[in-house]
Image (cartoon, rainbow, N blue to C red; front, side):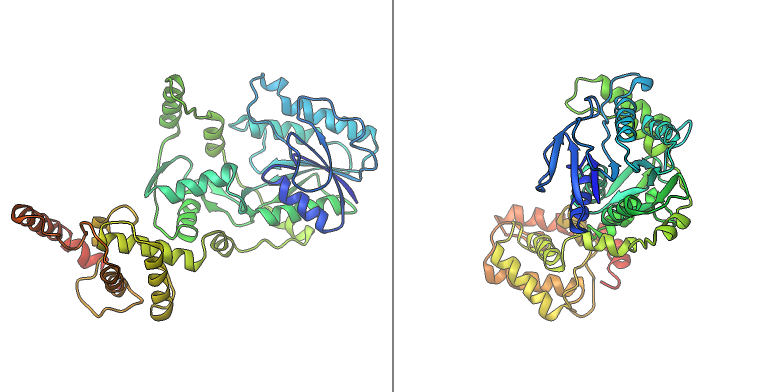
Length: 411
């Protein structure tokens, strides 16, 4: 087949282009930026006329392009004007298949403009082979766009205030989405106007964020729900201030207006089995060796008071791989005092648990002759400082004792 992809240099378009070429399809791309793959490319955006020669010999159009930063009234939005022009040009060229990348949130009266625009455009797909793909929350691949933002939030913060935490979302991996879109382009007959490309089983947005933190970043995340009106007020205040950062209220309303659909029948009709979410997310995170190196940074810095050298980190990782089962621990990354809250009070120095890992870190730190103040010992810089340091240590240990008795179990 000869397929035209709009937005072929974007987050979804780039892997979709690669997947189409791997299947032997001839691909033409309309996009703002030239794609990395060696294909026929026409520079284009939704405000420009459709290039005259781009539709020659095309069998199917996969329309992904979307312009987010529109300042026009909604009825004159670039996405409406540009998509209508592309659809008209495809009809005039006699192209059989037109697939619009839409959203599961597309509906009449959607809270955000994106959902309303996609609903309007879907209603204008009147041809037999003109269909809309209602796409769920896309994850995986390069950490760009919404996917990149979610990964960053889940990884950098321990407590995350967020709206829409009780809303159900239906994720789909980027590669599964590309497969679904290509199957829509290749399908011989269409028996429905919209196709759901999303996991049939929904998960709340709050649970999704916690899952990202656990599977990708190997940490715990506390998600605190926020009321929509309070967030919109904060957005208005932030945008009114002379700050370098601005918050798009459209994104906020998109989260607040998340909906779910029944996609099981559509996936079955396409013969598309989505990969399990937890396994797919685990594959998106760092490998075991990298996690052990990160663990080494935390523990060696805690016992030595300074960032360890690479050779000491490698020695730590090799030691854990040889004696500790090679399974990384889930540790706080903020400060040594936070790590103390998890330190077991008694028990054997099992290298598969925190106490054994700390013992290993102490040994490597001693051999490496690390300098500087430590989190677990005093350097003895004068009698007064030593006494003050001892008092401080006793106070901290006394405050942390009840917590250690609870959190230190099993570690």
